[in-house]
Image 1 (tube, helix red, strand yellow):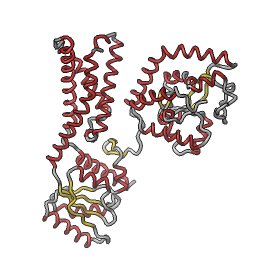
Image 2 (cartoon, rainbow, N blue to C red):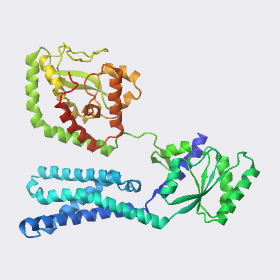
Image 3 (cartoon, rainbow, N blue to C red):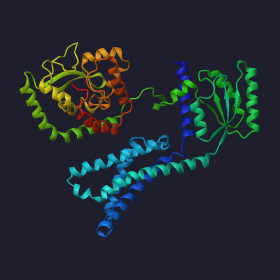
Length: 481
């Protein structure tokens, strides 16, 4: 606990140093970029409306209407982009992340407008050529704006900071970590000298070394001193800082290998101090709400097509063999909570015990209708009810029978981490061919690896991509029997 109390203020100080070094400028830069985005959106809305109407009708049209639409889109876009953290200074430096994230936000904003327009029966007024031109040109404009903005910010950064001469004071055998060295170079620093501390920890040797450091910085145009020592050696750090108080230069303690790995993780506010986030929830509350909204909207939109199919296939199951139409089985859901899953009955048996034998090719337990339903995954359609109840999602790791959860949980590392998101009707593993029975442990390992990748890399766009990909793969009907 004492070591934690000593290291925690240093973590906070180091995080401030890294943020200062990584900044693109003052704290107003993100706000300026956000205002620039909003202004460009409004101008683009007016320009698209005027150009389209002039090209088709020979007149500019209602400029006030284009302005109001632009304001609405700009507000929605700004709120969504802020919620996704796209205006953070660290995010503004990553061109690929910016273009991908902004394009997704732009698409979501227009999908929201589509739903609102249909709900208000105003689709005719909204969905003209102007609206389509606005959307398409906005996608291209995002890429151009982000590229040019980043170029300008980089040039401003270089011009304002230039190359700072930095001296490193390091312990023998403890060089500056690669991540810190890259950060120094990227953010305008140049290591002009490295001075090693004496291996023997006596005061006279340390004083001699500090005199060498002080003489060097006074003879050269050094602007910063970086101290690379073990963070656990608090007495040594205090002695060095005591010696260096005689020079009017910033002295910064850079992280060693262990602390560097910690500082790569997010630092979160915890009262009056900060904490290192060693593990984060797969989704934030807004992200969970967005995923839930996608589940509800997509499921409700599909019901007019699905309900007649459910009635037809349910009748086929009832006529083909004796037994209930729906098969219910206890499965493990989000955060290890059990729930009853619904499926069309496809077998002559209803296994739900401690040992459950997986279906295999030519399995005699599968009924005639069941074979067709399983081949095209139609037996999973009743799980839309689980989705509406909030027990499942359209996309997520497929839930397994309790017997299989208990078996594989003891064999495969991190198997239980699949339950950190809601189980799904389809998932990343199924889209990549890991569908059907898993008679060998390596097959289940491959499926679990894909499930865990999904948990770590979830995004709304990934869910949409999986849904589309699943439809295409189900039509091929592979690995299902």
